[in-house]
Image 1 (cartoon, rainbow, N blue to C red):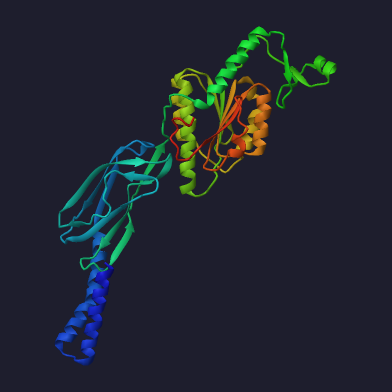
Image 2 (tube, helix red, strand yellow):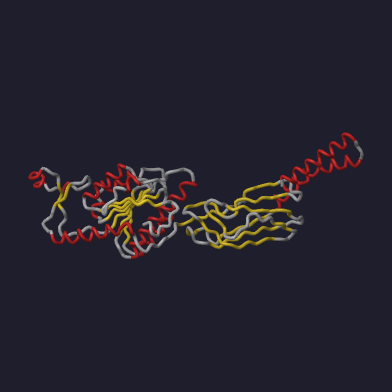
Length: 388
C-alpha cells in the first residue's frame, strides 16, 4: 500500500510540474484526476464502512479452557456496490481460531458472502472478548486503509481446565512417612502429649506436664486419627494487567482442580479453604462433591485482598490444620515468614506441601525440602503431569 501511495504522490507532483511549466488541458486534466483519487478513495471507504456487514457466533458463551468450541463468522455484501478488500483480525492474546488466515483479503461482489466455519480455543480461565477483533478495509486504489473494531464482540465465560494426573510425585515421600507414623502410633499407645503450637485449644493443655517439665504441651486425642487433607488456595490478585493475571490465575486453578480431582477419584477426604468476601471451606469426599466444587470455581473471584501469608496464618490460628494429615498449599508466592509458619505446622505432626505457581527462582526454599515439608515450583506454562 505504501508503494501505491508513493506512485500516486510521484504522479501528482509530475502533473503539478506539468501545469507549472507547460500548462494545457492534458496537464490540468491529469492534475485534477489525481487530486480526486484520494477524495474518491476516502468516500468509498466511508461508504463500505457504513454498508458492510459482519456476523459472528460461538456455539456457547460458556466454554472450557483449552477445549475447542464451534465458531463461525460471515462477511456479507448486502449492497449494489462491490467491496474491494476486506481483512479480519482476531483477538490474539487469550484465544485463537483454528486455521484462520488473517492475511487473506476478501473481495465481495454485490450479494456475495463469505462463511468461515472453524473452532475457537480459549487459553485461560476468565471472561474476555474472543473471535474477530477488528476489520481492515482498503480502497480499490490501495491508497487508504481503515481499521475499525467489530461491534457486538463476543464475550466468552471460560471455565478452568480439568487436568487428570496419574500420580503426585511430591507426595510419595509424605505417604511413606505417614504410614510409618501410623504404625508407630499403634505400637506406642502411651505417647499422649505433644508440644504446644499457637492455635491449639487451651482446654487441651496438659497442666500437670507443664508443672513437671516446665514445657507447654497439649494432650493428643486418644483413639482418633487425623483425617484427610487440607488444601489452602490463594485468591489474591497480584496485578491489574489482564495479560499478567489471566495466565497466572488460570494455572493456579488448573493446579487446584488437578489435585482435588486426583483425590476425589480415590475417594480421599479433602477440605479446600479459600477467601472470597470471607474464608470459604468446602469438603470433598468423592466425585459428586468435586463436580459441585468445579462449578463454584467458575464463579470464584480473585481480589486485591489479604496476601497468601495472611490466609495461611488464619487457617493455622483457627486450628483447622491440626485435624489434617497433610496441609497442601497452592500459592503464587512463598516467603521466609511462610516458611517459618510451615515449620511450626510440621512440628505439630502435619506434613506441608506448597505448590508455588510462579516463574521466579525458589531455590532458596527448595534446598530445605524434607519428606515432611516441600516447596514445589510450578511454572505458569508448565504441563502439570510430572510436576505435581
